[in-house]
Length: 81
Image (cartoon, rainbow, N blue to C red):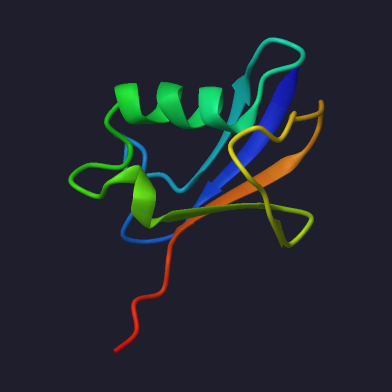
């Protein structure tokens, strides 16, 4: 199945792009997608604990089952003080 991804700066794909469509297996959960992207070096020096993953403008958890055609946004969690 195909998902649309949007990374928000400073996160980027290797080619500098912030948008990409990726193919994943049906039933893939958010944590498996993050594992894949982390393995591709997308998060660079930022740890996964600092990321928020959203779909339909709602934050999703690692065990969330992704669906074909979903638009997934990945951003760094805001840091406050």
